Amino acid sequence: MELNNITQTKLAVIDSEAGSVKHFIKKSDTNFVGFGEVYFSTVKKDSIKAWKLHKSMTLNLVVPVGKVLFHFIDSRPKSKFYNQVQSFILSQDPYIRLTVPPMFWFGFKGLVDGINLISNQADLEHDPDEIERKTIDAYDVDWGIHK
Image 1 (cartoon, rainbow, N blue to C red):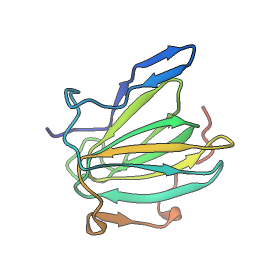
Image 2 (image 1 turned 30 degrees about the vertical axis):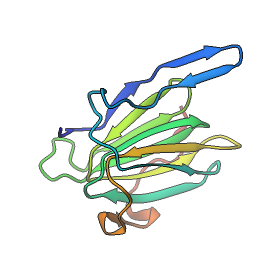
Image 3 (image 1 turned 120 degrees about the vertical axis):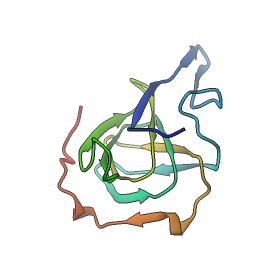
């Protein structure tokens, strides 16, 4: 399945007195493209990690703890979104998953004190040859956004 753009999927949260269950992804989900690995990344409040691009990997991102600002820049020359910046804030409310196709530059910033935890379910295992990187000043985006 080829994705044309970043998609947002509202995820189920099942609350109980003892805690909650937060769904992430099922293989029956429309935008599930395969399993390679799951990893977690943390980012401290006001810290920025940018810029990275996956040439082949599809990302599925959720923030089950904390609040994180993401910026994505479409680098696919034939895309109608080419060079456009798309910004999202992920947290528990609303609890959503972003599915990001390959060839998007992205960076992120922690927005709250404590733990800002990102989880990625990727369709490929980590491969350093599959990643490109740029310095934090490579793109002029507004890191001050706080919705």
